[in-house]
Length: 291
Image 1 (cartoon, rainbow, N blue to C red):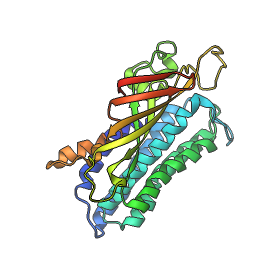
Image 2: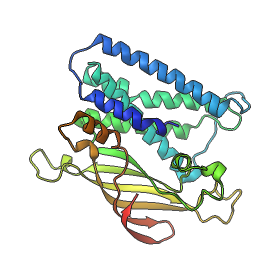
Image 3: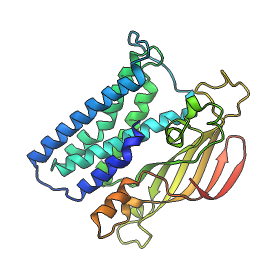
Image 4: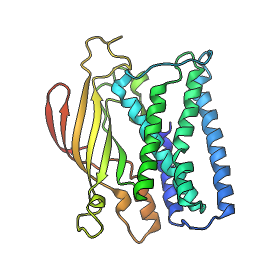
């Protein structure tokens, strides 16, 4: 649900970022507060209607889901928290909030939003409040805040890529019936990346391509259920580790504000590039292009 809203949100925010200013604009700030309140209220209402309305409620309780889906769902939480925090920072800067306040108030927006979701889970009989989720939500926000405080830029990005797996047809109700659903639900086809911008670590006068990144990725395969080996005891669940190059679209600048906004909006997607996979089965694979 959150990922579906990232692309249009980032297009808007990158357009907004073109007009950032250094002095407080009270009108803009009121607009930001009103918009965030409406979006938050609408998102919570929609979540309740879609996920919780037909599920029996319970007293508040905790649930340890740290072993599910080879932790792919946990990483997804961290990525979502990171990008909501980035969005929160951008709109506060647009309104003229001082940089450090924008970093702290905006950067923790993802943690605030996802903690609200955890509270919903805590009162649901099918789920529960997960401290593991809270930990990775905090880590995602912390990655954004830490880099912004240290460098005033994001030198290491969290990124996402997806390819259709061979498993969705076996459990389409769990892994997704359509391609769009699978991008959100089928962890077998998802890969999450840490993508580091090389030039930003080499000093100001280096001639290294400013758009070229080095990326390490994590994925998993063979998962037909969250908890290992309950319904499918013979499933061959493996962990996959990748090394690759990447393109940082946010560092490619054109004369067009709209083009820059679009490049920034899709900056969370790992660019298809050659990659090497090492997995927990001891197999090494080389890809001409991997996504």
